Length: 186
Image (cartoon, rainbow, N blue to C red):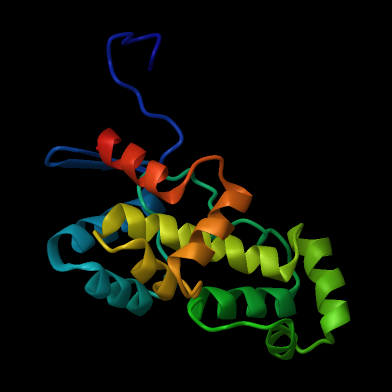
């Protein structure tokens, strides 16, 4: 595209584009994400989440993220018990998860869960949970005017200080800088 139209603005590695009144998605499943984005803009975040839940899409993606995001990361395996735990974590991010609680959902010992989760998902259960929480925090920062404190509460991190500390482990910039950069690219 860049070679054929060098003056065109080409935005790569995203699942949909919003350009004024036009929304363009990368494919069929991303069309669902696009529709949920439109619904959020028109009727609010809560309704879009209810529709996603009704469609059995436990979480949805924003348009500015790559095809493979935190929601899909670490899920390319066939371990049913780990998938059950990952589904539970996604569905109940706000809960104060402990390793013991995770092991109970996965129906295995804490020690075995730690080893098995790293083996199949490539990260610890705690790191996986943190990535999910930060992914949802990014989505909420992009889609809502909420404060960092409210977002931190919504994703299960408690307060904005804890959100900033977790963010710093996985990102080079601050949540505020990320939010400003996203707002200026719209």
